Length: 439
Image (cartoon, rainbow, N blue to C red; front, side):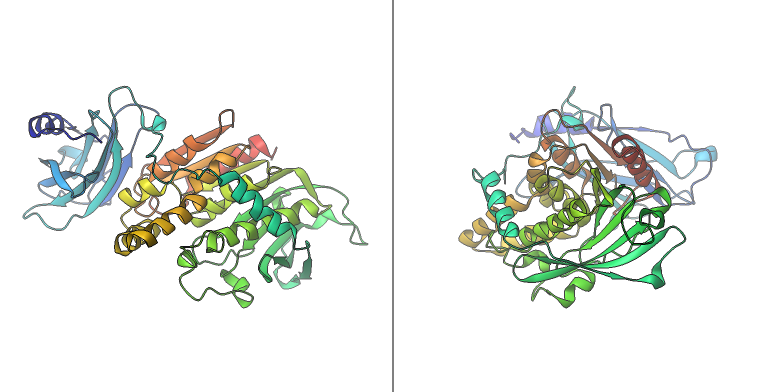
């Protein structure tokens, strides 16, 4: 971002926000904050509601795009009166140039530690956030496509060997559950849970029809448990890549898994985990009970990354639902995230010697979900939270814009959502599956 002189900064940021009343039907139970980036156009909006009037509220805006952050603008905001007491909203006006901004809210009687923070990119007039393309740091390396072709060839050297074990105690009224042990790269195995509609097989165990299927991947370090959607006629494969859930019995990282061989892109964790996910997709396409034209990938947080990466490596995937997408658009994430993996990588890079930091950056460029998106050619839906401190919604917008031209896509930012997958995101997923899986 080109520097502004102090006069320009004062003139711009003094007008950056306009206080208005927030129209609500009932007195809020707060404090409750929402941030609507109006990604399709119009002013970005911060709104707040308190159970009781908080007195004066101080909103401070800081520029976090410079080597050292500094205050750009601050203003005391009086809460609304009447039935909306304790509520306020702030409209964000266009910026002179793309500006990474931190918005902190504190309350009187004395300014204290912020009770809320939001971070965004302020854009110039006529440039909606949806058109933000991202910084050029960590772009796909020149051999990016060839790197992943080599990786897939490594997986091809491992025969598709699956061991299915019935888990009848977890059968449901509509579904049968199996544990699936799948061989994958580097002489290891992963464990998945496989729910199949009861009426898919005949008495001899032969498939009598083909069903749509979903590969569902886990959040960071979590187990992906059995997920039953058989009442809708859907097969689910809940996949646990190495170091997750029961797959730990076969492969457990000696360090925090995101840092495993982080200086070596040929042997780092996410290369291996992406291939684990690809092996799960290959298993689905090998099954006679699966409709090969209706296989989707889904996940939240790290699982949202896995959903995109699997579709990038497996061209037969029909559609993707990536929720609160993590490990994507690192340049933006390392500026805007308040906690989590982006912050950890930022701190590690800052603490590493230049030669080591360069190796880490190279590894991240191969694994970045936004870069993986460039290889996806099926419909993709991305859902982000407006106040997510772990996976900033701007990262989702950059990933969305990295999808190739002609790919059907949509993105939703839920203003009051934190790092979670709430009802509105699930409803969006359902609509996507109706459109692209025919559910």
